[in-house]
Amino acid sequence: MAGEDIVAVARLNATEFFGSLRKMNSEINSNTREWKAQFSALSRSGDWVGAYKAKVEGLNKVYQTQQEKIKSLRSQMDAIGKPKTEKDVAELKNLGNQLKTAESQVKLFDVQIKNSNLALKKAETGIHELANEHKILSQITKSNSEVFEKQGLQYTANREKALGLIAETRNLNKQYQAQDQILGSLKSAYNAYSDEQKQSDTYAKQLARDIKAQETVMTQTASAIKNNQTEYSSLGKNITNVGQVTTLTADHIKNMGGKLVTSGQSLQQFGFFSQTASAGLLSMFKQGMEGSAKLDQSLRETYNMLDKKPAGGMNSFL
Image (tube, rainbow, N blue to C red; front, side, top):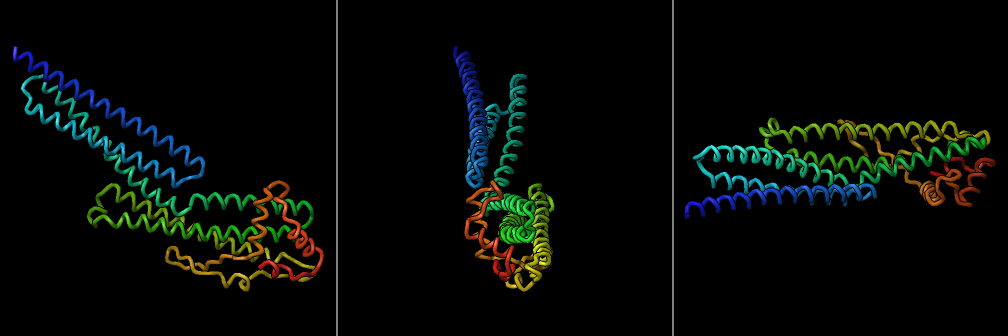
C-alpha cells in the first residue's frame, strides 16, 4: 500500500509541475500581448517614449517568468536524477527539450530588452517628433510656394521657399544633435564589452553594425543641411526687387552657431534663427495648409509691399 501511495504522490507532483509550466506559459503570452497592445497604441499617438517604456517593462516581466520556468525545469530534472526506467528516460528527454527551448527564448528576450532600452534612449532624444516635424515643414513650404507661383508672384514664392529652408534647416540641426546622442548611447553599450567579446559576442557585433549605420544617417543629415545652404544661396540670386538683385550669401549665414562633425569632416552649422521666419512659420501652422496656410494680415501686407515696392528685399527677413 505504501508503494502505491508513493506512486500517487509522484504522479500528483508531475501533474502539479506541468500545470505550473502551463501557468507560466500563459503568463508569458498574456504579458506579451499586453505590452504589444500598449506599444501599438502609444506609438500611434506619437508617444514613443511611453511606447518603449511599456515595451521594456513588459519584456522584463516576460524575461523574469522565463527565468522561473528554466529554474523549475532544472529542478524537476534534478529530482528525477539518474533515470532508472524507460519512463524516466522519456521524461528527462522531454524536460531537456523544453529546457533547451526555454534557454533559447530567454536569450532572445535578453537581446530584445537591450535593443528596447537603446530604442528608449533614442526616443528620449525627440528624434521621432523632429522627423515628423520636418516632414510637415516640407509639406507647408511646398504648398505655400506653389500657391504663390500660380498667382504669378514668383518673388514671394522664392521668399517662401527661403523661409521654409530656414525652418527645415533649424530642424535638421536639432536632428543631427539628437542623432549624435543616439550614437553616443550605441558606443557606450559597445564599449562595455571587452576586446575579446567584441570579436565573438553576437550582440556586440550587432552594436558595431548599428554604430556604422548611425554614422551613415548622420552623414546624410549633414549632407541635407549643406544642400539646404546651397539652395538657400541659389534662391537669393533669383529674388529680384524692382531691378535690385538681393543676394543671400555667406553674409546672412556666416554667424550661425557651431560646427557639425561627421566622418572626420566639419560642416558649418547654419541655424537660420530669424524672428520673422519663426512668426511666419507659426502663422502657417495656426492657419493650416488650406489655401497655402494663409498668413496673418500684417505679414500678408509686408509680402505685398515687397512684391510691389523696394523695401530692402530679403534683408528685411534675416
